[in-house]
Image 1 (cartoon, rainbow over the protein chains, first blue to last red):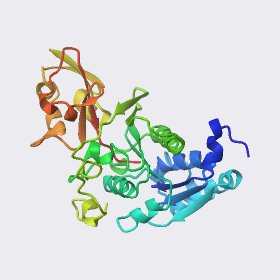
Image 2: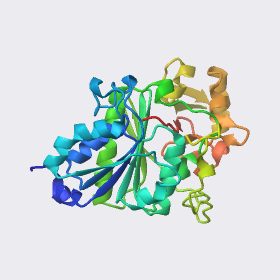
Image 3: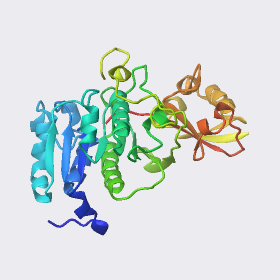
Length: 253
Length: 90
């Protein structure tokens, strides 16, 4: 095996366990990059099936996978690469839910979140903070994408910037669409932030924002809020309570 | 006084696709009123009854205005405001 990675990063990567929440347009390229980097364990968490409408951006799947569950299709696509790089692929056949979130976060060294809904994004942020695990958040919609790395129990956190699950329905990829290359770039950036987060520390917090219409990638500095309910000086979120992640319709998103 | 406002893609439907617009005002609040005049609908997307919507962040240069003086943050001529909304999707 030969991986051209700087300063022993490839060797170190073999010791890392990473949980990937959501195997969509962001999760697929991130998984490819991490397996090729020789990450030790890549745990995949999703319960969705491959849909025809996924194929323009979810690059682990092909036409023959339509209707199959994403985990099995991803395992088929990643398997040969994983055997070569020594990565163990593990499948979590479930959504990332209030009842399993903390245990799943606890079992790894870092979590990558590329979920397609806000409830899962906030749940991942909360579970990772409570379990002191670093997390890389990603999002993509239409022509814009964002990626953000939060250190273990770090400040600022996702709630410093976006506060709480929205009470009104929000646009997602199914309703608004997304450009495949936008999530491709952001997914690769998430993998890079993951490798960097695991091998360095002490960087300032920046929300990377990609504008696909102008091909600009801007780092937006993020500040910690002293009254943040998750990482502030008097946090009100000390455990995972399911009611916090319900959408307006009353069902987990 | 004129300032520049960077418009994120979800709001460009209100600015005829422009990624950057100019607006007038000596505070963030005044600039949002100015944006509403030129691009109706903008104010509702940015503010609710409590102020700047939870899901929207307004930056003056590199600073989130929540950490400055919020809607009352004073602006110099030529200042650059950026609107950063939360997005899901993946």
